[in-house]
Image 1 (cartoon, rainbow, N blue to C red):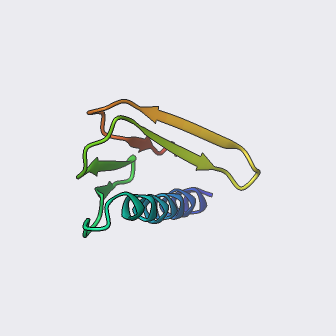
Image 2 (cartoon, rainbow, N blue to C red; image 1 turned 135 degrees about the vertical axis):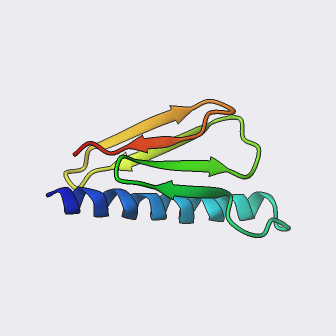
Length: 84
């Protein structure tokens, strides 16, 4: 079960990064490279944005259909803590 949750979190993070990369490309066609550095450990996933932002919303979708949005203000690095 722990492996399943870890895989779910990593997959969600990859999907979020891929979708945010597309929206950034639409705003700035000259932008090249990732918009954030991602650090993954046993206890959390941490994003360090490389671009300025007014705020971020991290949305997690569970297999049962539950959706949990997390809002981060400007200058706050988004992080997702993993509970085992």
